[in-house]
Length: 50
Ligand SMILES: Nc1ncnc2c1ncn2[C@@H]1O[C@H](COP(=O)(O)OP(=O)(O)OP(=O)(O)O)[C@@H](O)[C@H]1O
Ligand SMILES: [Mg+2]
Image (tube, rainbow, N blue to C red):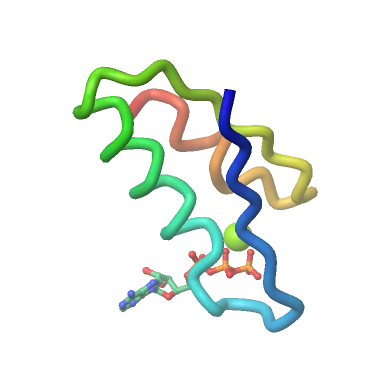
C-alpha cells in the first residue's frame, strides 16, 4: 500500500484539489484508493460522491 500525504502550511494552496485529482487518476488506473480527510472543513469528504 502506498500512502501519499499532501501537506502545505499555506491555506488555499491546492491541497484538497490535488488530493482529489490524484485519487481520481489512481482510480482510473484501476487502483483502489481512500482519502483520509482530517480537515475540519471536510472538503474532500463532501466530494465523496465523485
Ligand atoms: N492547479 C490549480 N490551478 C488553478 N486553481 C487551482 C489549482 N489547484 C487549486 N485551485 C483552486 O484554488 C482554490 C483552493 O484550492 P483548495 O481548496 O484545493 O486548497 P486547499 O489547500 O485545500 O485549501 P484549504 O487550506 O482551505 O484547505 C480552489 O478554488 C481551487 O479550485
Ligand atoms: Mg483543503
